[in-house]
Amino acid sequence: MPVILQVALGGAIGASMRYVGGGVILRAMGPNFPYGTMLANILGSFIMGLAAVYLMERMDGSFSRYAPFLMTGVLGGFTTFSAFSLDAVYLIERSRFLAASLYMGGSVLLAMLALVAGMALARSLT
Image (cartoon, rainbow, N blue to C red; front, side):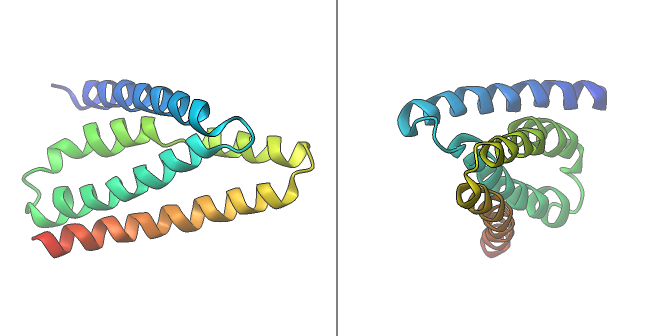
């Protein structure tokens, strides 16, 4: 399958997962904080860490052919910086400065920690 189709298919899957997951989180947690986007970015970063180690480091490149589908497509469609930015701006526009600061700082810090945790887990399992 051509790489561009792998990315497109993965993106459709990832975006669909984010849409469904976001709806579930919205119903469970309410609309007062962008939990769905934050969770998608943290979880996606964790999976990216796992995938980076397994697909790019541990499999001697033999599975790197799946990276466009999984990493660019699925995870690129699942995580979203544009939605993160929009949610942050909406919080700021509503003068919810503490919530905006917690959201922005927490999202970036926790996503990076999740990525490192995913890499560490993958490395410990191989």
